[in-house]
Length: 91
Image 1: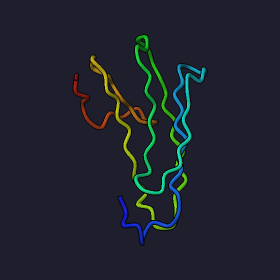
Image 2: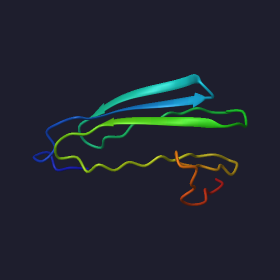
Image 3: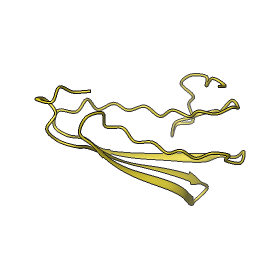
Image 4: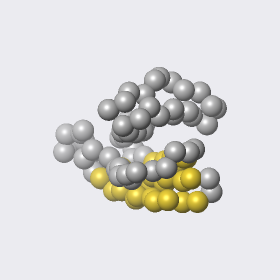
């Protein structure tokens, strides 16, 4: 969050969810306050999925983002180097 006097540009982003090369869904967001966007996709079959995120940063933005997955089952999340940063929690 930014004080209204500091944040004068829009944080923009594009989030895409793929299974293989098939695009399942995507969301474009434009937000001047929190810079947040999300995809709600329920009941996905087991498998390997790819989340792509393309941010557009403003001049005063803190260049940081978080990807979170909420699931009733354990989910392994890896980055493009194949590394897992931390274990996921089962809800």
